[in-house]
Length: 451
Image 1 (cartoon, rainbow, N blue to C red):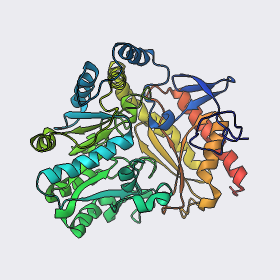
Image 2: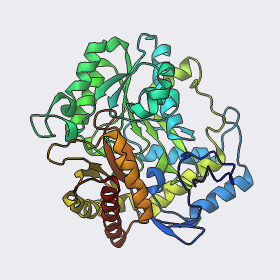
Image 3: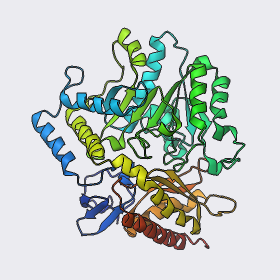
Image 4: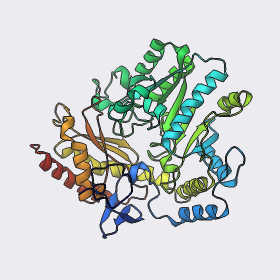
């Protein structure tokens, strides 16, 4: 009987067809339930827990701020936590990104960034710039504008009539591209497809191009070629298109640098952050913008037309400040970069397992793509539900992973993501690989695949 069917809880669960263990404690990379069972959290919940579970300093910072003042409205007051959080993020952000608008979730940050881009062009006197461009596969959130920019069909199906049109461009997804990521690169992997789409739509009509610098769950941590982002940046500059880096998942050190764009030497016009900036201790996200964009609003309407009751929230900002300082004081982003080669070396062993087509990623972010035939890269039919079956088997094996589906063609395709806390040990990495292999064997047995 599922948690919902039992009728003993009033919780509207996110999944109504499964049994939920009741977690009572977290410590480091581990979660523990009321019955004493434990799970190695190999994906930080949802790519969120970067500093580890149970960090007392962050919990205490939230409690202290809540005791002083938890909430004041952002239209009337400022306070120390929001000033400190903005300064901490600005100090770490690339180029001229220095103004920080805190919100509560990644979807909210993406929604606000896209609205900021549109408002900027309207107030600048170019209201014809209304189109948004995004990558497919790609994912940017579940609010309606963010979902419109997400090429994730199984999330969009129910809401098509409510979504706005977004120009979708093939993502640099080498495993599924004709060029396989080898020169000469196809237009998708080289970045040529982005400029071609701008020209096709009419540059004077395009407001912004939004993308994750390294693929998130929708393309399984697919890493673009070194010249991809410089080429896209140059194309956006030529045609006056705002480049929005969605770093909700990839930012805050997850790929080994504060910004996943850093290795490419590229500065976006707007950046969204979330997940790791508060380590999961509270919901917190942010839009980071330059003064050259915000000045247009200051001279016009006077502010961003995106009212949120809990933006600039004092207790949430205090958690963000504590998390960012904890990352700094313990050099955890540096540790992420240093330990990443060992992480990916261990994961490479998974390539030898049946039904593993590819293992890829950067930093402490990895995607393992499952296929029915590694030689042809043919995906499993969606009806098999390979990724969901694997995620359930992983939980039974004491491992938390993140499944994703549909990346191969919009319907078929299965993969699992790994993104452990930056404090993960070598022994824990070995255990991740061991339990991953155990779960894969159980999955193959359950769905009747011949290995």
